Every structure is written in C-alpha cells, then in structure tokens.
Length: 124
Image: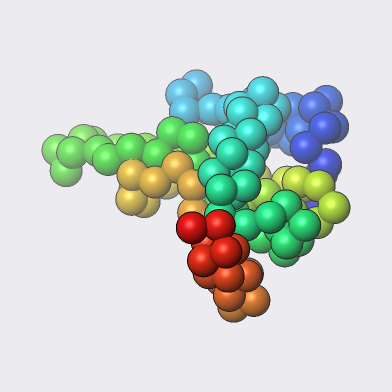
C-alpha cells in the first residue's frame, strides 16, 4: 500500500474496510492528517525537511496503558507513514494497543541519525 496523505477518499475507503467491525479507537483521514502535522512539527526541530526521505513513523493515536484487570484484548487502528517526496501511508491495520504509551514510533536509518546529530550541533 502506498497512499498519498492528500487522498482522503481513498484513505477513508481503506479504513472503512479495516474498521468495519470496530466501534472504538477508530480513525479517519482527518486523524491521519493531524498526526502527520504533529510529526512534521516535531521533525522540523530535529532535521531539515530536505533530509526526511525514508523516515518511517508508526502511529497509534489511541495508544494507552490498560490495567491488567481489563478483560478482553483492546485494539486500535494503527498506521505507518513514510516520507518520500511527501508523506505516504504505507500500512493501516487493527492491532492490539498493548504497546507503550507512545503515539509515535520513529524509525531512522543510520544516515538520518548522523544528519540529525549534525543538525542539532549546528543549530545549538
């Protein structure tokens, strides 16, 4: 899957299929747009936009901790975005939200990490 963030109708159609039996912890294209804006505002402080190509972020806007006494297996809709020339959604899925209480999981290559360190040193 590779859907541009601006294709709201296509995004909502895919989400409708994924979330067809779900009533809680669901998302829509507006949720994805908001998450991408939040990601961009965080990334711009760490790395120039010209160096974002290949950055991948897994997003769970409903990430939370559930007490051990919670009966059932709580699920939420999660998605992955990757920056090419713009942000593209590369996967969407319903999965357990028993992950850490972290909405955004950032994946950087070694070169991205080195560029980030250089950028921070230069702008400090």
